[in-house]
Amino acid sequence: MPETSKYNFFMEELSSLEKRIYSFIQRDIELSEENIRLVKRVEQLENENEVLILKIREVEEKVVKFQRSEIDANDSLGSEEKEKIKTKIDDLISKIDYHLRS
Image (cartoon, rainbow, N blue to C red; front, top):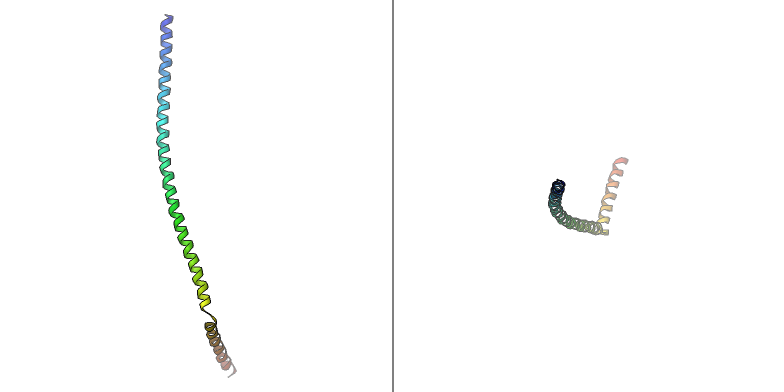
């Protein structure tokens, strides 16, 4: 009888160990699948990040070009244009002054 109880005890232990091993294997499979999903997501985010970095560079280049064109536009409104505008303003002031005095 003692041999039978030892046998049963070992069989129960063996069964318990098999169940634990099975649960570890299942957990390993789940973690592996989750890891694969996460790796794919990281790759996707890295690609999106690269695209966004390129778009940012394009926008920054456009801003720099716009700023340069603004500076050029202000410079192109050089002394001749400024003198014409000044003359027009002086003429308008003279007309207003004339009408106010009459």
